[in-house]
Length: 188
Image (cartoon, rainbow, N blue to C red; front, side):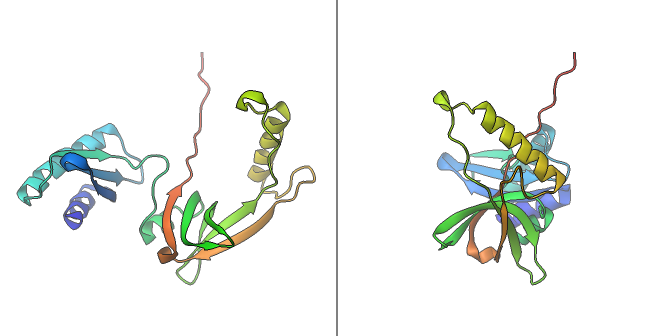
């Protein structure tokens, strides 16, 4: 079934991210494209897949077609190649130095493996009552973000050690993009 869906999507210019079977016969198909996915894309794919799955006699009760979301899973080597340079979150199958979860910038290594540039940041100042950040914490976060954008590794005497984790895909339990939201101010 997955191969049929993948061929159909490729012919339409889309990429298959994942297929899930849910309860009560739900078939979920997650699609992507370099330009992103719109509601019109999902409708078009849903119509085509409904026809193809009927012709191929694949049993399902309801078809759901969706984009993978901002925290898109990375599963295939082509996913890791496409999103090199992006911030991702991975979970290893086996612990490394007592940890299985890591965040960092994805790199492609020469030997066919992948890397994750880890940044060890100093611990945050405790949050104010009610979970709101204090002005000092917000100011430091803004300064750190500006320093990262400028390509520097340290902010106001704070050191940030950069380490690299190199892995192959079979060492990964799961990997996802770290969502990056960009809000624009409304113009009046």
